[in-house]
Length: 130
Ligand SMILES: CC(=O)c1nc(NC(=O)[C@H]2CNCCN2)sc1-c1cc(O)cc(O)c1
Image 1 (tube, rainbow, N blue to C red):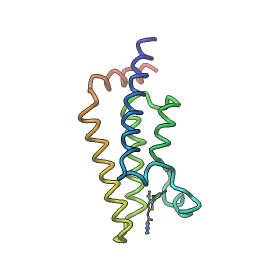
Image 2: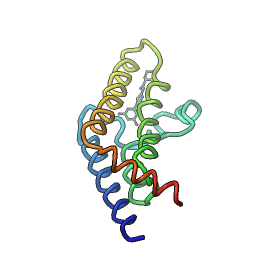
Image 3: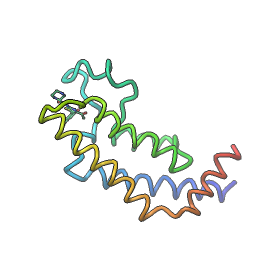
Image 4: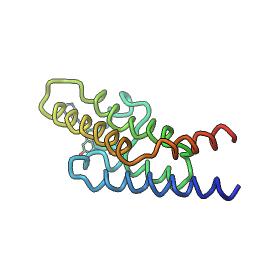
């Protein structure tokens, strides 16, 4: 009903705000757009579920997420994919892994500081009821 749509509208506003702040952080430049398959032809042989910050925003606008937990599953793909594609001691691998770990910690810190657990519980109730 209308109250549920109010909650999901507030969820989308919160998730857009978090995603846009991440996209503005220079440490996460490599994660702002889909990996360019022309530049990195073997990427899709290694990474089965690509994800990036611009795709998160599109998903939010398409009402893909009813809970923060669903959003987190896709947001976690971004740094998990980077760790998987960059496992070696190569300086570039280490550089990307460092930024992937910073992304992981930053997302968790924002949600710990800014997500009210009662709000997420209401979102989970809406999801269960559908
Ligand atoms: C996001 C990601 O996982 C990524 N990984 C890379 N790894 C490498 O280049 C390592 C791989 N091992 C051998 C030595 N090179 S480059 C890169 C990337 C960076 C961008 O600024 C944009 C973009 O689309 C992708």
